[in-house]
Image (cartoon, rainbow, N blue to C red):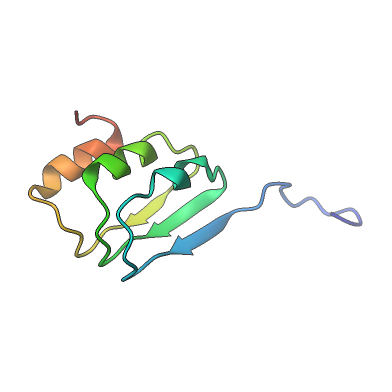
Length: 83
């Protein structure tokens, strides 16, 4: 940063994989500045979503149209309560 800026030194970003042929998003768990993730219409698996349950900055996650048998169970996985 330059000057006397009081802005945060952390870069935050959004990632959109809407409609992409992706099944595994576990690597995204390492992107500590990721705040918004759009996985609409992907083939992401529940086991891969489990890696996002402890993400430190992720505050918005869109999963419309992903193939799951039980949406409530998927929400439990994402929240870290489903095994």
